[in-house]
Image (cartoon, rainbow, N blue to C red; front, side, top):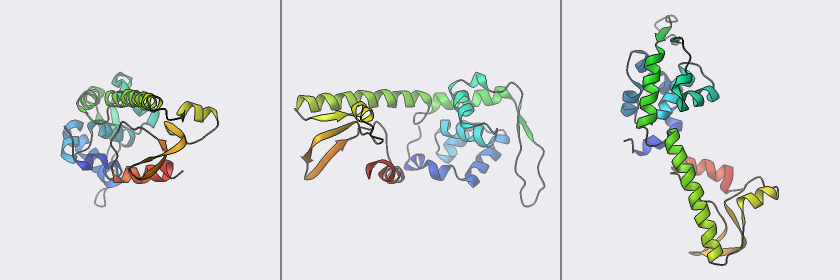
Length: 199
């Protein structure tokens, strides 16, 4: 199981140089799962990167393949490797569909951080905790507007609940609450801070 803090720094793991290292190892015959362990990257994320960058698939096709690897193209996958400073363009390498299918299956089954199954669990857990949040507020007699009510009123940014009257919690004024069923590292908090929290 992948558990280090690096696992959550996807922006570092997806740099062009790093992606070329993944492609080189995979085209030399190494399984995606093995590469993911060596680089401490979630297997499902690595499979996604390789399908995008190595096979040249668009994001929608990649998502479809990861949910159902049987939709992979029937023909062997031709990978065009970039030229290095010492070589001209290399001949394309052919990867059999059966090998890529097996690799993707393993990644989906073994990924405990970001696979479709994990995302489903995260989404259902998030919905469950949003419901619990609303029930707790109602039990405490705290008036609020739900995310759906805010959307219907035309708000573009909608927390799970916006309190009609701010409350104090541990010396801070709280105007809204957004329940998240996911981990957030410093980078993601910074991004969400700009995109959502500050607004």
